[in-house]
Amino acid sequence: MLHEYRDIISKLKVENAHFAKIFERHNELDKIVTEVEEGRQHMDDLELEKLKKEKLRLKDEAYKMILEYKKKHNL
Image 1 (cartoon, rainbow, N blue to C red):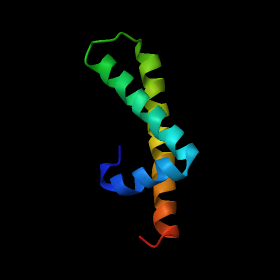
Image 2 (tube, one colour; image 1 turned 135 degrees about the vertical axis):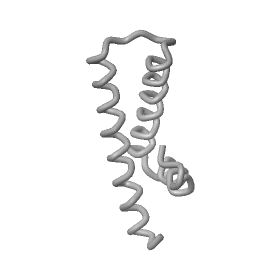
Image 3 (cartoon, rainbow, N blue to C red; image 1 turned 45 degrees about the vertical axis):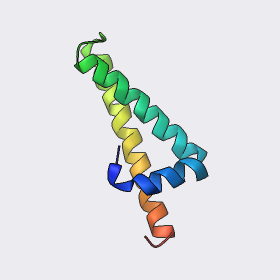
């Protein structure tokens, strides 16, 4: 997720517990979605869409936090 901000993400995961939690949950959801889409796990379409929406919401929240960090640190 957001690989172009790898350095900032590393710092935020250490400095901000909420960001770390969001990042971890996003990665968990990404793994589940990938498993379902590749047929290694079964899930009904409605549940899969729900997970994808949660994953996107978390990514948006993390991105907002990254932008705030950049602004605060003049990056």
